[in-house]
Length: 116
Image (cartoon, rainbow, N blue to C red):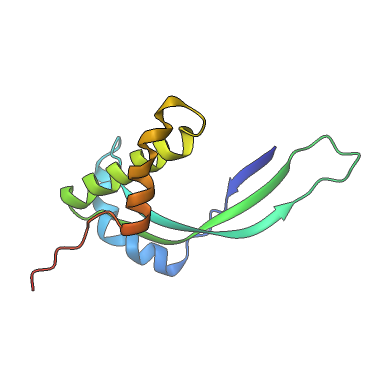
């Protein structure tokens, strides 16, 4: 099994994207925020043949966008739920419904509001 670790370094771009939400995050101790994140590989640890350890990979958040309104929050939440169902339904009776996740991933989640 491979252990996942998060690198604690916060890149300047990530900090800048989180800054508009920082005061709210500070004030809401039990708050939750939907976001789109991009992870990057930072390092891997592969124990030697005689070591009784799992291998590990460390990832870092390299980009983040936090939902700025309820509309976007709900759309991201639906996409997350669809992706979860898609990931966990393989080989089950629910697999038939996974087309929605495939469709969302292929065509986007409808965040565009073209007012043209």
